[in-house]
Amino acid sequence: MGAAPQGLGALTVLKPRLIPRLDIKGPNLVKGIHLEGLRVMGDPQEFSRRYYEAGADELIYIDIVASLYERNNLTDIVSKTATNVFIPITVGGGVRSVEDVKILLRAGADKVAINTAAVRNPKLVTEVAQRFGSQCMVLSIEAKQTAPNRWEAYTDNGREKTGVDVLEWARRGVELGAGEILLTSVDREGTRKGFDLDLVRAVSTAVSVPVIACGGMGTLEHLVSVIREGRADAVAMADVLHYKRLTLADLREARERAMKGDAS
Image (cartoon, rainbow, N blue to C red; front, side, top):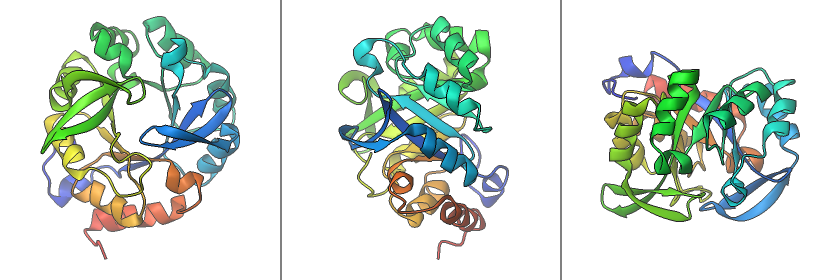
């Protein structure tokens, strides 16, 4: 977890957080595969409230079409959520400036996740961290595997290549001031085939800040593996919760098993 030793002592310091991820297009919660082929799921307010009441540790909202419009459109949704949900909310998608961050924080967000704008203007990471604190600045990395143990960072919801190595970018992002990394495997996203454990472990051991693993959650065993083998500090999930394949109660029990070392 982060740069902590792999022993069980490191696993018991803090419980890995369980974080529902809500991808938003317009007013709707949507879900895709490999960040494409989107299906409308419903009203994000209903889902966020349900997850909060079921014991989620945090929520992540991502405006997945923000790059098309060059702005984040989640202010109203975040504002409404913050009146009923009292856990940390991270918001991403189309965040391009310190002013964008200020608007989202005023609306009720606790943290912002920045991908495309951070790659294009790395100074933005430092500006946000200095203005609002590193704990507010989440570096969002969308990774695609290019070779064994090598991944390239993508932008624009997994559509655009950057030529940037994921591990190098993760390290640099932390040096610039990022206090957390949201790490999405585009290859695994929406597949329910499990996390890219090599990717999560490589990034978790490369940086000293918490890493949120995202992309591939399908079974309770996947959660156990990404905590124990991937050394994730938090796990974001969408499909298994949106489609009610698993409950947050199920996930909490699996988390306890992972922390005790009981993978049975």
